[in-house]
Length: 314
Picture: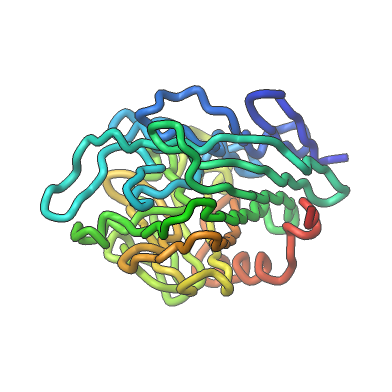
């Protein structure tokens, strides 16, 4: 079987293809509490083996490959770094939380897909739980496209008795800093990369762009055939997500990064007992893909329910 799943118990889950790793999902991080420890994917690789993620860059230690976190989660920070407050700027506060893994009700490998169901809890700086989370991940390889698909879903439940206002630094007054949610940072060689939309390509002027998908193409250092010296990632927003199509947080300078930003410029009132569901696809492809190619990958990702197939509904 070409698709493989390995479990380093107490640390990470590895998914591979034809003897090479596609991803390491580190569910028990060992980073300092100041970095808002939470599960992350790194390294993230293409089918050809190119690494397309960066771990703990020196200027943003809390950035970990591909991960999920929110900086403005009521009074708490589940992102890391400083907390932006209106009229005060970034401040170092005793409000850094962590996202703790509880267990894997499902860890499955099928003939064509692999999947994980995970239970987690979000814990405040002082140790009190804030919300519970059920997360699903699915992986499928598209060898005919030189690409593979990672499906991601989180369902957060407000287990407390108070409403949680979810926002971003932009909702607190900082322009074009609407990050929060699923977030990816590319390797250093992706600096100056190309952002791809359905209508063309661009760069940092696309910060805050709204649409159903967004792509990023970057180059790799070294020698090799053309298809191994560039890679493309396409992120797809699910149409059922709040505020869909989403706005996107994207940069090509001073580093390449991308993520759907459902709380970019609008706060979300998370009521007691309510659930918040967010679902995305990430397609990781070898080579440079143009707008037509990226649109095709996004369309294919939306054609099937990979999470139901790979991780089940349990």
